[in-house]
Image (cartoon, rainbow, N blue to C red; front, top):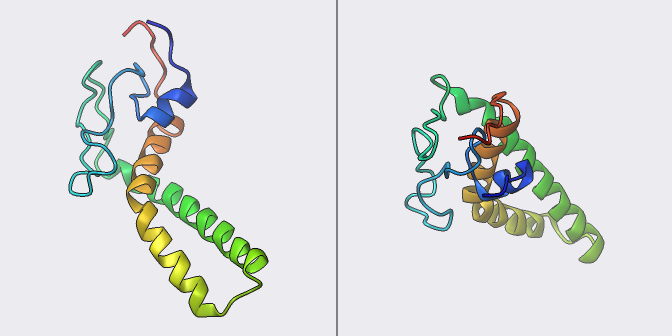
Length: 125
């Protein structure tokens, strides 16, 4: 099997060590189980939560993603909707944040695992 690039592993939600096993147990659109993570990689056995509370740091990544989406949306409304009233900004941005919450939750944890944990890729697994 071909080696999977880091970008493919991040976008596919794959293990940072073997890049074959899935990190999450259910798809993101399953709103009852979007946050269910495997405790260990199904392929190589890597424990995802390295220490208790490890994913608290992923909240910073989530905050940055949410802030970026909110800013882009606000600037888009400002320039393309001719600076509407304040309630329009709120009525567009708040539902958008709720809509992207499951994806934001998952991608922030995946980014935290891939770029902060310091786990080395091992293609032999």
